[in-house]
Amino acid sequence: MVDTFLAQTIHLVFAAIWAGSVFYVTFVILPLARDGAFNTTKPLEVISGKLTTISRVSALVLLASGGHLAGTRYTSESLFNTTNGHLVLGMVALWAVLAGLIEIGGKQLEAGLNGKKLREPASDVLSLYRAASVVAIALLVVGGMITTNVTRLV
Image 1 (cartoon, one colour):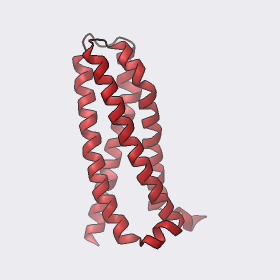
Image 2 (image 1 turned 30 degrees about the horizontal axis):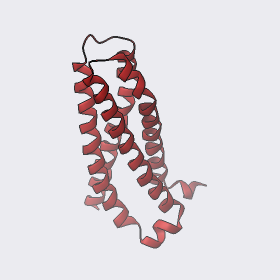
Image 3 (image 1 turned 90 degrees about the vertical axis):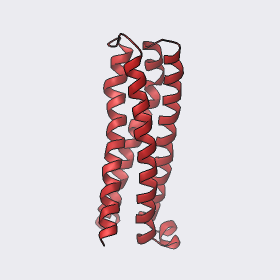
């Protein structure tokens, strides 16, 4: 019981940190960089590196805590044959997409910043980060659906 509470709490906290970080970079930092609010590439390099670190750590923690939760709540049959099981599998797919988008966006941004350009790289990756933000929000919504056992409500 305590392990489930801890796993669920850790899972929720890291999901919120990851989604919030992606959302903030997408809708605050990158538009500022695109619009010329920074005089040098250094702040954006640091922010991009920190987001990549947050993304990687969160992805690992979510994999571990989510794996524990799925292992204690689902059998292979219920995972593949119930709506909540399908939501869990969908969450895993969204998790992989979000991690991939952040990795790709971070590498593209880093490559552009290495050329000592600022506005163009920020503008170029903005659509990737917007997609990542949508995926991050979708992950939180699906998590809410699983947590509230939405299939029971319908």
